[in-house]
Image (tube, rainbow, N blue to C red; front, side, top):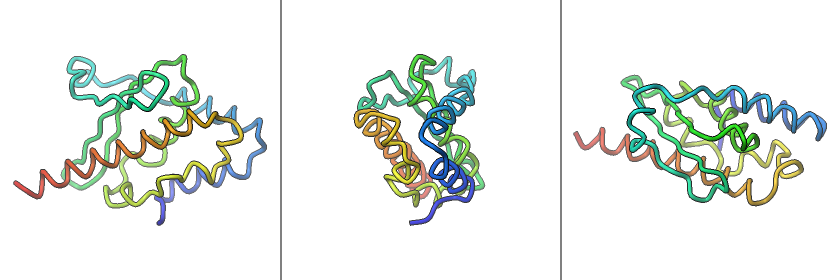
Amino acid sequence: MSMPQKLQTIVDQFAAAPRELRVQALLDYSRKVPALPEKLETHRDRLEQVHECQTPFFLATEVDETGSVRLFFDCPPEAPTVRGFAGILLAGLEGEPWEDVIAVPPDFYSRMGLQEVVSALRLRGMGAILARLKRQIRVAIESEEDQ
């Protein structure tokens, strides 16, 4: 399985970084997650909770008319590691073709060395975030094909 170039670059940077820099980079990515747009903030029922996360984590995806993916995350700042993972997903997958997002390996984050800086429970939550995101994209594509 391959990854979009933006995500591959992030994975390579994390993999090459010393352990303490991986933690700092994760925190940096946590600050890059924007607030929800008004259309989701006022319609929170459009967000899906990822129950596997220890922290309240919600997401929504969109596939636009060109097939590009848009990602939306809601995660409290008090959960910087999971929020950092959301920031990585945004930086690496936002605007990419849906086919490329679906093709991302389910455990891509293990190549980043995150298991050295994040608990196994958090890693499980990260895997669930990616799985939920992909499932939402598949549902959107299937419903579009049915129309």
